[in-house]
Image (tube, rainbow, N blue to C red; front, side, top):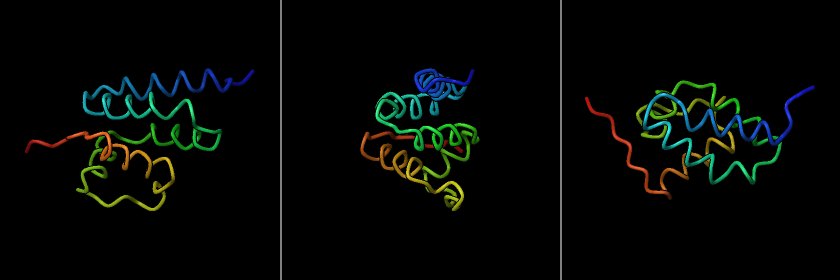
Length: 95
């Protein structure tokens, strides 16, 4: 038996909120809490793929330190990038 939509939402929320990097936990966990309940099946699948990416890549795209590759430039990624700006997330990298 496959994963139910409710189980998928729970798994995605858990994976988003427990990335292992505090900045990613906060960013992706908050995004998931706000948006997962309204996502349709296509958006859930895109978010699932997004969560397979490296935290470093997501943060660098968010910070504009690297260009967003076309293969990851989808509606959910755009929503995530806009969410970080609207929600006032201030993520900076120390060098």
